[in-house]
Image (cartoon, rainbow, N blue to C red; front, top):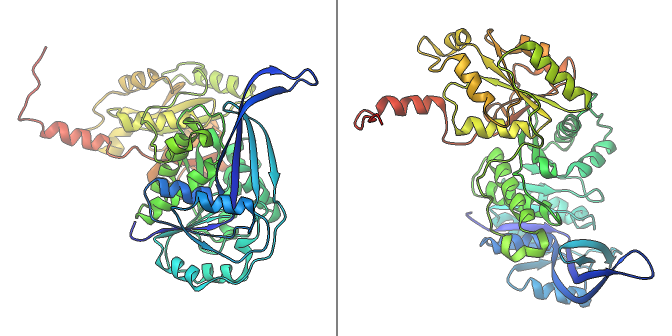
Amino acid sequence: MKGPLVVLGDALLDIDVVGRAERLSPDAPVPVLDSLVEHARPGGAALAALMAARDGHDVVLITAIGADEAGRQLRGLLADIRLLEVDYDGPTPVKRRVRAGRQPVVRLDSGSTVGRYGAVSIQVATALTDAASVLISDYGRGLTNVADVRDLLDRRPRVPLVWDPHPRGARPVTGAHLVTPNQGEARDWASRYDIPQSNATTALAHTRSDAAGLTRVWEARAVVITMGAQGALMSYADGAPMVTPAPDVHCVDPCGAGDRFAVSAAVALGSGDVLAEAVQAAVSSASAYVAAGGPAHLSTVISAGVPQTAGQALSEPRSRSSGGSADVAELVARVRGANGVVVATGGCFDLVHAGHVATLEAARRLGDCLIVCLNSDDSVRRLKGPGRPLVSMSDRARVLNALGCVDAVMIFDENTPVEVLRQLRPDVWVKGGDYAGHLMPETAVLETWGGQTVALPYLSGHSTSHLVQTAASSTQHPIQSL
């Protein structure tokens, strides 16, 4: 980044009290912890700043810290970070998490009373002017509602701004590049603005409605709602949302995952990435963080990446079909009978490659079955030209059915899958990432039964056209038969 990341928000002191639990108390069925050890670390906006600094970035933290023992301890933990403090006469909030090994047991909070904020220094304005990107880490203690702070943010230079909101915090400023609530926070904010929930029954539909409504109300460039193990859904002002799936990882303690997500998104935007790229980087980073133990292993996961391995389907495929409508209808009925979510996607899938597989695996994780609507040979020929398809529809269907993430394949002969969608009535229709932020041609028909259209990011560097061109040009080293 050409300039620092400026983190502005509420700083906390987090203390982990970790012990061994080998027996239950005779007084009550609760674990007895012994050999207690305390580990202190920055929390809130201070944790976000620490994460970015551990990544090797230049960081400025603008916050308010109390003149108490907890504040003294917190300042010591932030010794390697440029700290700009706003005058403040209240206590430093402390969160003590008691853990048995890596398992959280209880959280004890103190310093919850909020004091008064004083004037904002000229150094704060200068830091915002020089920033490559700005992250607002709001933990509901009032700093982001201070008039001088709001005025500076409204007059900020045109640099990327990521706002991580809090239910008790301030409304994001107009024009934020990315606002990053989790599902609970988004529903809380949406209810304040009377944003109606979708009539559909799926959680994804409700999340999409909240994201779209908040994008309009906040006048943000995009709102991305984090969905835990399901990844993140990003809504633009118009068009289809983009769902970025998360890798299949084991999570013991998600504390700090939202901060890790917001930091990674702000750094990516400050480095020139577009919104979709920034969200993909943030999902990968947050997944790596929780997979490595979250706050218990903070020092080892701050700059870790996510292994580029394929995720696993959430449940076993329920059936296999190569185009028989009766078999597919039975599959859909069985999934719906179990209150499951039917996901569908479509395409030619001529020369199936790693990009196709990544998209299909991601689509499967959005529901309880995945049906691929496959263009027939005649349909591909009309769309791609007389030289296509390279692989017949029966062979293409067989390859797709061999993938563990595909539950059924249904072949259609029209130029678009609209008619087959009317038959299937899927809950979610998935398209490639180039549709993110644009209206999809299938959206109107999906909406007639409450279905949702979403875009998934492509795996870069993979396309059928590229494979065909590479094969055509590979004449210098002919393949020898075995």
